[in-house]
Length: 151
Image (cartoon, rainbow, N blue to C red; front, side, top):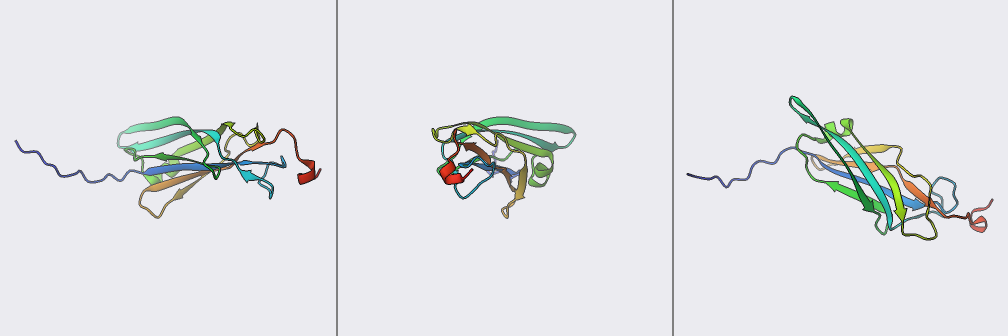
């Protein structure tokens, strides 16, 4: 009996990155202003649903995970290759959403933009790498700084 040790050819499955950011809306104006800053240590829940295109079946991959923002306020989820999900189809038949869970900040801890409202699917120059960029989430301080932000 002979066994072949040749590696199988790589499948054309997508590697998917889901990412977004969280900021502190210092002036509580629901936008990123010159006084706002990116918030490290914020916890975000990411929920995704991907439809796999497999002949004669309709498969879906759904999951929900928590991630914490880095020192730049960015959260990221790397999803390894999944059978039947290719970049072009993934962008059409998939969705991801992020929601605020909490923050380690004591000065900026009131939820502002609590969940993402939109996503942009970006196809990378690398073959079959998809990037989902989610809209920004925010926290705000419990009291508005009138001296800094005005009335």
